[in-house]
Amino acid sequence: MSIYTQLTPQWLKDTFLLGVDLTLDDGTDYPDVIYTQSINASIKHVESDLGISIEPFSVVQEGHDAERQGRFSYWPFRLDNRPIMSFQNARIRFGSFEPVDIPTSWIKSTSTIHGQINLIPSEESLGSYFFRAGVPLMGGYGIYENREYIPSYFEFDYTAGFEERSGQATIPQGSTEVSVTLSPRVLLSYTVETTNASQTSVELKNKSQEGFTLYVDSAPSEDLVINWTMDTLPADLKQAIGIKSATLLLLHVAGDLILGAGIASQSLSVDGLSTSVGTTSSAMYSGYSSRSEALDKQYKILIQALRSQYKIVQFGVV
Image 1 (cartoon, rainbow, N blue to C red):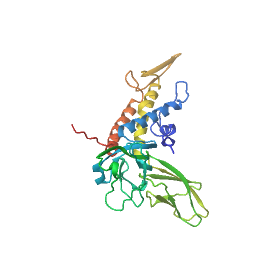
Image 2: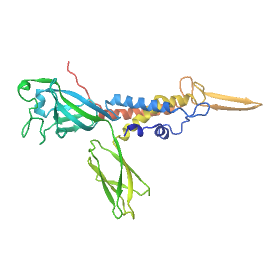
Image 3: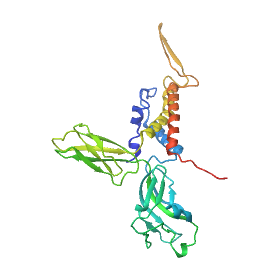
Image 4: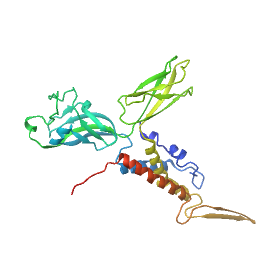
């Protein structure tokens, strides 16, 4: 499922824009495009800042070079896109020769968030090579033997980003729990939300990468069907996207349209009766500038914490 099923215009209205007048001068609602544009731009902004993929993204034939010293540390690689959701295929390729498939069971994700993996052989074989003990010589023999470096020798097909899955589970009559299996297993931490027709309170137990258990206090008198949604997008990332979406465009437009751009007050007098309206707008500030500035301060604190968690520090030698 797409991450955009969560980050919707209605979600933005119900959270960061709550209480803001979102209508034009003639009373009509803002067009949906202003919300979707703000959300899309904010997602890309956060992705670029943190160096991650938020929307699930499939990568095919991402090439990585082979260097001889990598043999002695189980071939460490840092994939280009992260966090890693799942692996589809891996292979080694030398020039125009036919590639040799690497079992995906060899791929060990040592840091899912940072895209760090190693290749550690299992009992599955690699083409015509069999590794039963020791460090694998994945360079092979003959034409490969004396090579210190082979460009784009390793290839990986994988999916990066934050995923959402949904499904149904049934607690049978007379029972109090049901196990849900997640296949493929989930590589990131996640939350689970549930709904059911009888609005019975459902608890989550035994959460792991392979699945979880849904539990109720008392056994139902008939089968209880539970709809569940598993989400790996963290709440703090949603918060950053929501703040950026509100302050990027929407609060400025809404502030300008309270009375009009740059209009601080307005008065009307008819037959000796008068009324006036004053706002915080001015030639320099819109009507929601104070709210926008408060959210900007929150965003700076939040994005700094997110950078420490997701961003990879690059080192260079001169």
